[in-house]
Image 1 (cartoon, rainbow, N blue to C red):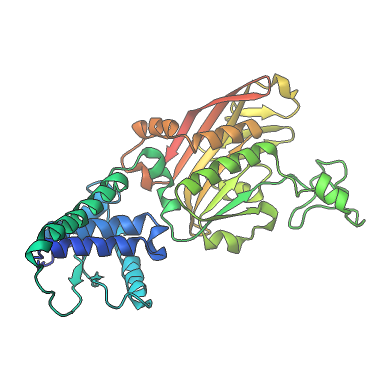
Image 2 (cartoon, one colour):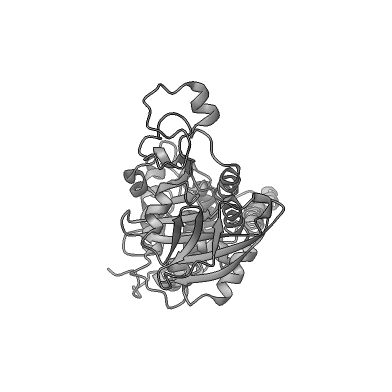
Length: 405
């Protein structure tokens, strides 16, 4: 059955006591490790349970859920963006796992049968309870009153399931909503010791990259080698990991030299750094905006205007005399890896800092969304960022070019 159609809904009326018992069971389930560390699954399950208990199961259709729970546009393509179906399938799996665990056998069952978004409730069988004695009725009404009020207060205090997401949340949605842990790949400078880093080729840029086979000492490895990363890249890494932690998204960190192509196919990836990150250079090479270099001159290339080089930095410039840097932010579904990739890299470290600030500050993304095409959050995105540099300090980022497709 196609869940996006309007199935015949069989609505079972429940008493007030049964509805509150079901709500308490829902809270018990959502507090389990199977649900509490996620945002998507509790949001959808709570929404469909509450609407069913309120007598509105006919509204629980795929498109409606996509709009109300996941902030999709009313005319979004449910086939291209099956977020409701995939989330409901995972909820069914977790519900089955929950009731399979010991200790839940006698609880109220909340089921979500395949092909429907209307939950079904099974009340546990048990002997009828005697009516309370007259002297106990007041106390019983008091207890039932608490059972009604407390869950509602808790729900009102922290649960806001269908508030539309801001532009920054929509930008990060394809990464955060993925079930896989995010790979954060950080650029490294080329090895400064007596041999190039594994997987890299000596370029002649560095005075000691002579290809010598002399043993690499610990001093060379840790004080001069590629175990170190640039401070600007580390700062950007800190900003982005903080954002993922706030969204309760799992991640792991690797250097670019220890990241393989197979790693990029396993999970969404965030690439930090440009010319010091081989994976950034490879993935951005075919894109409209990319990173290019001619000896000491580095610039943001534009395949639609290959001769354009005004967004450039010369590495022969004394660093205190640098006045402007540029960065490239990309969020693309990479066809080679079949995974979502987010890239934040500058021509110098100042640009990388600006990119990290842009990707974690909702104000900047809201400004982009105002001028973006419809459904921009489901498109590939490239943003060219500029930042003013004054006495070795970068200023606020600003968008100087953009591309959606």
